[in-house]
Image (tube, rainbow, N blue to C red; front, side, top):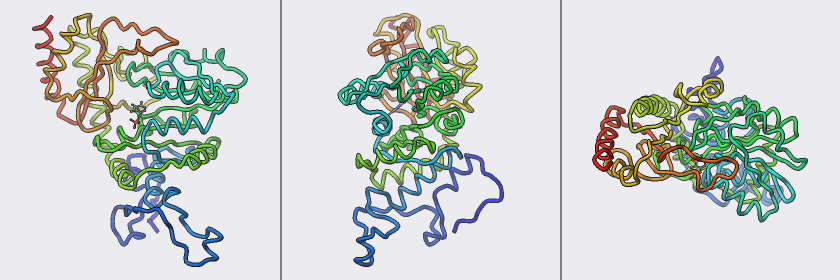
Length: 394
Ligand SMILES: *Cc1c(COP(=O)(O)O)cnc(C)c1O
């Protein structure tokens, strides 16, 4: 058995110790990767009685249990269990299916990750679930949107393009009074920077593709739930046959070991670059809740313990050609979707394409940055070159 530490451990330490027991695996530091489907029973009696620690590869192996245990450990005491999924979007859709069905209603923030909205408008609608989108800044005002059949409120803070902060404790209090669950996409902050279960969330989802993986080389998702929500989640996850390939489970577990130090650097470098951008004459506004100027800063300071490396900016009105000249000049920022890896990224986005409960009119072209693990001085020098190319076009 693993030795038991003498005092309660901080989350950063639990990331290192969780989900492994070297003495149970010949002293090797990391758990073995079980490639497995069939589990053999020693006798006919055992087979008939399903008497075995494991039943079948899809239902769990020592490798998947190690990752689940580690993820549960960093969520804190109010997390009852975790399920693993092959992508962040599969984690979201499975969690939603676990909670609502025909004749039910859910409330979803207008700032939600777009594929979540596509699921609600597509499959969920066909299944007979009605979705109402709400203003992410609604706070306690959400009370008026509940119906007798409202099963859940879906929150995401900050929005992963538009960065509105939500008052999750206020929303959770009302949701619970009305008998509904609170589900959260916690990909941006991770359980290290937002303790979802201490703030009233019942089901917390992460696209592990982002900071858990951390190296842009896996697709992975996970859903954590408290005791109230976990049985329904576990049931839906099993019924739908969801499981993750063992090598991706291994890479997620490996990524988790260094997540705290990586996030610390994403946080610090992200703040440095955001502050530099805020002072640029070409920039109208930086949307980063860690900045004092951000409308969501007070909530972020109250509820979060850090920021990751993802934020957006609004440029002053300018031609598309000027924006593209800026982006094309950058050498350290890749142009691509997803985020959470070691590399810096930039994309153009426009929330007006899909918003329904709120109007998106930022006042200029919008770019989203992911600040990676490069030295921020180099990133700033690269951005400076980009602004020179922008000026040449304007
Ligand atoms: C990327 C992302 C997802 C989906 O994760 P995938 O692994 O790409 O399916 C969900 N939510 C947010 C906020 C994301 O950024």
